[in-house]
Amino acid sequence: MPSPSERPRQSRVNVFKAAYVSALLNAALMAMQIVIGRFAHSDGLVADGIHTLSDLAADGIVIAVLYLGAAAASGRRAANADGGFPASLATLFIGMLLIGTAGEMLWHCIGPAAILTVSTSVRVSALGVAIFVMAAKEALFRYMRSEAERSHSGILLASAWHARLDALSALVATLGILGSMAGLPMLDHVAAGVIGLMILRMGYSNCWSALKDLAARPLGNTAGQ
Image 1 (spheres, rainbow, N blue to C red):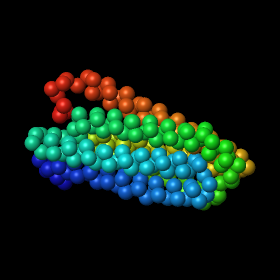
Image 2 (cartoon, one colour):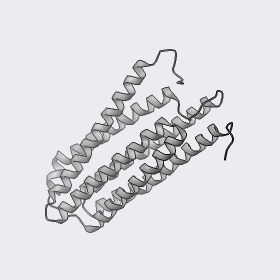
Image 3 (cartoon, rainbow, N blue to C red):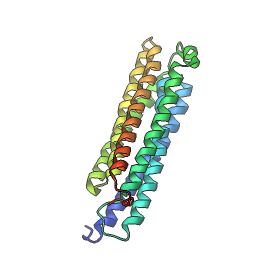
Image 4 (cartoon, rainbow, N blue to C red):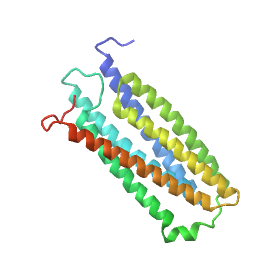
């Protein structure tokens, strides 16, 4: 068991480990979803893969913020690896990224290309991938939430709940695929649109939360506490 003086360092190590696990998992899932989604003609699975791509970008931002927080914490006593101001900026950037991703997905669902693909049946391989992604994201949520609570990392906890939303997004994709396999291919397209709206809502929530935090922060206090 680490001594009290070693606990902050061990806490940062655990937070970094969880962030890297999330990034590696999202990279693997994103490749699987987009490749199999294209092959299986599933708009819902491809949309969820694009969502996972935005998650991977968010993971990169989280890791960068953790590095900044660790560097700032090295000169003072701190219980976690987060930096308040960098974390708020990261949250704002992630929110903007999600809004842009959602806009592109929704355009794909209502644009001219949507009419051409609505009658295409979805292959069964898409269903297996969607179920696997749903289970993997739920497992990632539980792991990251546990590490976040243990290390008192706010940004890691936010990433954990992001993973839970991803699990729900995968559930929507699964339902759309099942509907398409049952003879209603339009449902897979609708699932892609629903996932786009979910991402849009999350992006708006992230931006609003970050802007409120930045507005409440004194001009001279940009390093966070």
